[in-house]
Image 1: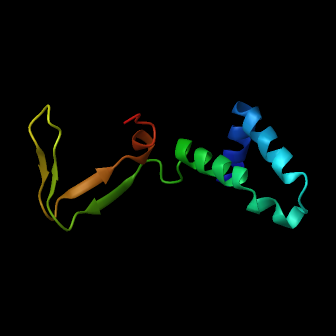
Image 2: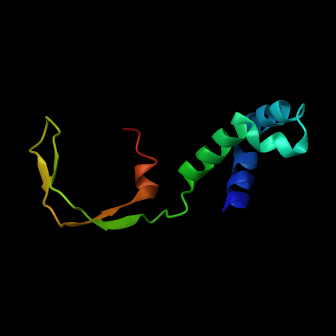
Length: 94
């Protein structure tokens, strides 16, 4: 939830929260959500704690070939059932 995300950011990233406070302090309250820093904070929180953290399951509509140069190509055939783990995906440095 957004409440959890904001709490997590406030606990672990006080510098970002202070940057947002400084940017929003000169604006009327109804314009606080327009400050770019708030969007950055929320996006980072959602990256770290995605709503659908366990991922998403799909049947793919076309064949996908993953080429890695170092290893043999990986081929996912059309109509294959795939699972994307978003929690791991958003923490992968690549």
